[in-house]
Each structure stands twice: as C-alpha cells, then as structure tokens.
Length: 467
Image (cartoon, rainbow, N blue to C red; front, side, top):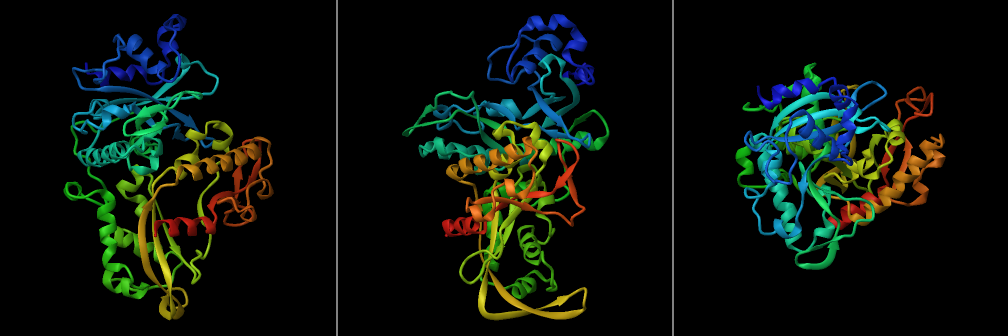
C-alpha cells in the first residue's frame, strides 16, 4: 500500500480518536508537533533532523497544514506552508538545484486539518489529503523566487527580505517573539529568522482542487496539469523572469492613449468604468483575458493589478480600494502575520499608470445609450511591480490593530477606524452595493460593509518612488 493510500485512514479522525488517550505520552508541542506525531504514531516513522524528504525512499515530504472554518461552513487556509528554514550563509553559495528546499517541496503529502482554538493538537480532525507534485512550470517560477531571495542575501540585504519580493515561494518570518536577529553574510546588520514557504494564495489553489472535487483526496502526481488560462509559458520562463515577460508586453503601448491602444489590440473602444483595467489585462495576457485575477499565475501568487489614472497635478483621481473587511477573520485571528491584511499588503502589486494628455479628448461608444461620449484622454505612462517597504508595513500593523480593537469591542463603525483625514496612508470606509448590503458581525447580527483602502496620497508616493 502506498503512503498516500494509507493516509486515508486519517481522514475524518484525530490522533486521539485513532490511538486513545495514551497519545498524550508523546508530549509533542509547538507548530511542528502534529506532523511529528503523525510520523511517529501513524506512520511508525522515527522523527529525525535529516534534511531530505520525510519519506526519503519515496521522495515524499509530509506536511500537516491547518484550515479554519468560516461562518458559511467553507474552509480557508490558516497560514502559509513552511517548507524549510533559510540559512543565510548557505543560500549565497547554493544553487536552487543543489538546495535541500527541492527535497522538501517537490513532492508533498499534504494533510489538511481543522484548527480549533483551545483544542489540543491530538484532537484536530484531518479533513483532506493531497499528494502534490510541483508542476514543471511552477518549479521554474519557484527557482526564480529562490534566486531573488538568494541575490538579496548576497547583497547583504537579508534584513530587507519581504514576502512581496516573490511570486510563489516566500521568505516568511519565523521564530518566537523575542528571538534575537541572526547574522548575515556581507552585512553587519542582523536579520530576522526566515523560512522558505509556499504562500497562502498557492495553498488556496491546492485546497481548491480537493474541495472542488467533492472528495476528501486529490493527487496530481505523475499528471501533466493543464492550466485553463496561463499568462506565460514554461518556454518563455527559460529565458526571462515572469515580471520581465509581462513588462516587455507593455513596452509597445507606452505613450499611447486609450483609442490607440484599442487599435493596436484590434478591439473596439468603449465606455466603461473598467476599460483601462480591461486593456491593461489584455496587454498583459496577449489578448487572452480581461481578468488577470483568474490567470494561473495570479491565482497561485496572489499578485494584485491596480490601474491608476492621475490628475494633471500627479495625484490619483481616487483612493485605492481592496477587499471588504472580513470581521469574522479579524475577530478569530490575533496574529498579525497570519491576517488577511498582512497577506494583501505583503503581496506583489502590479501598477499600471495612465496620465492625462493636456487639451486632448477622445470619443468612445456608450453601449447603453448607443451614443458616442467625449471624455478626457489618458496615455499609458508606466507599468511596474512593487512591494510595500518594511516601514510602511509597520504602519499597516497599527492600522490592523486599530481595526481589530474596534471589531473586538463591537464598535464597527467608520468613526472608529482610520479615516482619510488622519493622513496615515491607509484608511477604512464603506464599500457596499446599497444600505441593505450588510456583513456578518462576529459579535452578533449584521453591520455595514467596510473596506481596506490606500490613501490617494500614498498611491502618489508609490508612483513617484518608482519614477
């Protein structure tokens, strides 16, 4: 019987239900404890500190990863999947192919379990099992991520590492509060402990396969996974990075206005609030789709594309909105590093900036009125990828703490949160269809839908900093 087949006996059970109260004698504690207990008690495998895969002969790494259950009974990823610690002195001299990271993530047996606050780890119920082999194209992108992290360490910038530097493979914070920073090569500045991890977006992609199948198991082992919609090919990635490929696609359109861009794309110009985002997505995807968010790479990486139209003074026409605040998530999660907003703000952003052309207007067709409409003309000015700096991320933590305090004290009203007038780079304000469009209040009942926002002044700062 294969390791994957044997793992089916875990599903629907906890370690206590399988082995009884004597399990407590194992005395495993901490985040790694559950995985070690599964190895020892379920697989009868002696835990060791070997850097190779847990099941070396089969080249399979065992990973137990937690899920949370939402109010609507759906499951969501609790945290990124930690693969292995980063040794700053080792990575600068080790190629991706020679790293022990490969053995830790190339073929994984993922055991998803339900995390319940207050429960002992041996009472966690296992819900799904997945045998996941990293697809060849994913390995190419992960290799590029590894090289990005290694290059930063070589420059003596390990203290500046961010999960927003990369697509699928993150360099996540690791260690307990109070741990001392670690020395790094080529710099006297000490850096926080970090580990290689697969980002939450990538883990959601994997979870989606098993929950979407209606079964408790899924495997892509020895299969050629065919993406429904991919932005770049494996062949393209052999010669350029993902971001280089995307940026190169925009070069022929720089300086062109909306009408000219539509002509180059071979599409009809139209009036719609989303038209600048639409053409940006069509350029990035080689006319494949107007919705980059549904592409394989954006789904797995969590990249967010934002189109920005500037005024003549360089200020964006409006502040920048993100997802609505999930009050239940904020209520249930007291860890900033595992919060929704931390994942959003440490992600990779793709900015597409349009500037007004002085004294120039364009005429576009309105599908509703069937009449042409004259409006201000904008030209594509710049396209760039961006990661939030560490200093701004510290301010974002204060922003989150303010939101969480209001949620925990059941004061979910705009007046309790940071507003535009506070000039703190981030603010909260309503984002709902109408007054009847409400969100679940974890304290009971319903409340107004509010949203995470970047201030327009902060967006201007980001754009000017890029220039």
